[in-house]
Image 1 (tube, rainbow, N blue to C red):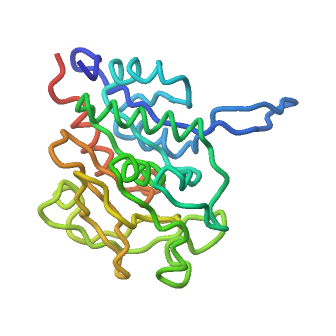
Image 2 (spheres, rainbow, N blue to C red):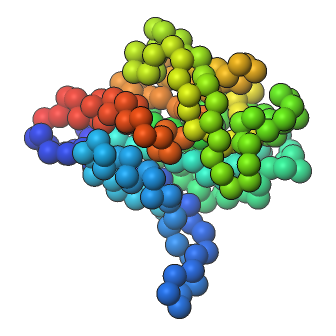
Length: 242
């Protein structure tokens, strides 16, 4: 059974990470990296964050069995070969280990009905896993950089949310969100429903039909002071415990 935390204690929420060279003290080594904003967002809603770096696929079932929920975090571009396209000149270098691991993790979470929140790259991975494809460089389609307004910084824009969706019930029909992405959904994956859009009609959120809590958002709620999405996610992760 997915979600093995018993009783009424705080939810254990796994968060995927990058593996990147990093410098600290006199060390320069490969490290599991994650912006601290993810940890703080979960701690604010009284969950316990657990870092889940790319690992062997054998570890996937262990994570899903022992965690109450998963956050598939933002990060580098997915390999476009996963959705049958060549690489655009503005698409980042592939990270095959992370791609393989997170797709396997998402697949097992879906099969186990484990609550998950897929953020940024995480939403794109969910869409690709379900057979969808991506716009590799959004300015080519919409013009301008409204979705990623400044290099290395998070911007903001408004999204319209379907009122009958999970997100609509949590956030209402309009909300301003932190944004930083140059890719987006092109062909929607099987079983996914688009539930939020920007004014230029970019899909900003999806929900997986029939799943206990399977939500993907293109924006970055961990960069916001609004706790409602994380609160709802953690609530779903603790429902039905033994």
